[in-house]
Every structure is written in structure tokens, then in C-alpha cells.
Length: 175
Image (cartoon, rainbow, N blue to C red):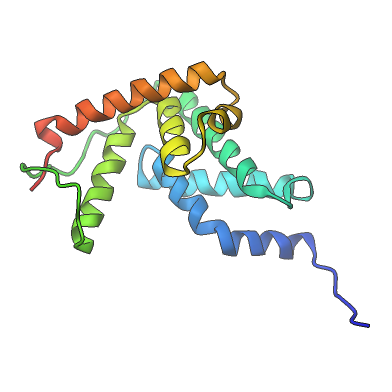
């Protein structure tokens, strides 16, 4: 008979962070207003997950996504009246291409997408990221954000339209 050593809560959580930490940080980058905010958002999410770990250990990512969306909304509400630096790197004029096999082009496209997402409200950004980046259904997105299904549909439609308009602006096009 093989004796198994029980895995502690800390070891389980460390395993989760090792396997899903990059995904949590990527999601934080998509939801946050800037790169400095993404690390704080990911850390807040992981701290809140650790606090309830025994309850969520079987399937922690849905809880982490919801915590992150809520933390981002809370942070936005707290800081919306403060001044923010508008210093953004100057854009290069030119056409935006859909296919970019070159890694440098892929990085530039990702950077442009992040800038476009930052133009959305936190709620719109959360809906777009959950629906199209994490590929959740409208019903799953509504459940994650604790919103009615119709609200998720209207927010998603409005956000996609804003992204289309913003992507066509000459100031965002690049070569």
C-alpha cells in the first residue's frame, strides 16, 4: 500500500499560481488601465483567492475571474475622480493589418488592442474580455459579472461598436 502525503493548503495554492499565474496576469493586463495597474490587480485577485482557497480549490479560475472583474470595477470607482497622466506614445500613421506573422507586428497589434480596450469603461472591458478573450458564452459572462443577460448583450454590442470606431480613427492607425 502506498502512503500519500497530504498536500497542504499552501502547496495547493502554490500549484495553482504556478500553473495559472500567467493566465491571471494576462487577464489583469486586459482589464486594467495600464501596465502598472495589472500587477496590482493580479496580486489582489490572488490574495482574495487565497483567503477562500479551501472553498474554491476544486475550480478556482471562475472565482478568480469574477474577483478580478469586481476588483477592477472597485478600483475604477475609487479613482475615477483623480487626475491621470495622458502621456501615451505617439502613434505611427498607416494601415492596421489583420494578419501579422512577424513577432514584432504581433506585439504591436497586441499593444494596439490593449490601448483600444483601455478606452472602454471597466464594465465594457470586462464584458469584452470575458466574452471574446476567454470565450465565455453570454450567459456565463452574465453569471461571472452578476448582470442580467440582456445587459451583457447590450454592453457587448455597444463596446464592440466603440472598438470599431476607435480602431478606424487615424490617430490609432499604424504602418
